[in-house]
Amino acid sequence: MRLGYRFAWLMGRAACSTYFRWRVVQRERVPATGGVVLATNHASYFDPVFVGSALPRPVYYLSRYTAFEFPLGNFLRRVLNIVPVDLQGGASRGFRTILSRLEGGAAILIFPEGTRTYDGKLQSPKAGIGFTIIKTSVPVVPVCIIGNYDAYGRHRRFPLPRRVVIKFGQPLLFSDERERAKTASKEELRELYQSVATQMMDAIGRLQSDSIP
Image 1 (cartoon, rainbow, N blue to C red):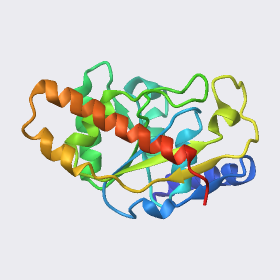
Image 2: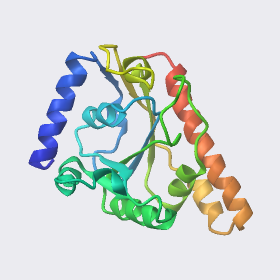
Image 3: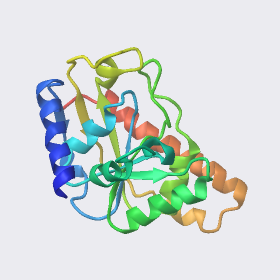
Image 4: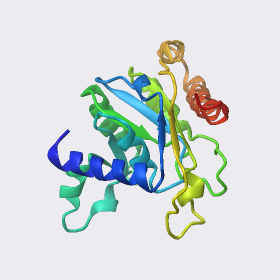
């Protein structure tokens, strides 16, 4: 970890362990090196902190390209491993940015739901996560954050000291789907992207319902 990221990582871990009294379950399921997609549910602004602080390796986070257009914005992006994605400029540019990081061995955090839940329940996934998974060859680790909605959901003005649990699932490879995509028609690809996204959310849902070991 670079010095700036490590400082932020240590601060995040301190907040998670003391204020949120977190528990991290089976973090060893995340590969220690190499490209990996971390796909998690999204209920709180703190979700990147919860997941990133739980892992001993650096994690990269996606953000709108315009979110850091202010003094020191570029500095913060570099320190916090934030990858700017030009959503208004089209999906291709955003995908190329993600792909280059994954091919370089990065761990990238993605929210399949696209936005924070309004009621604490899992939302339907966007097909874009399926597109990303199919077009890459890296493992995908489902992650479920439990308690994040109660701690700092949309209905909270300030974060509350609620207990949070971060559960990591078994890595998924989607080998069959990636192979089928090589010869699929455009219509079949759209269905395949949505199917992969749905499988990903189902894996997150199982983590949410499974008992904590």
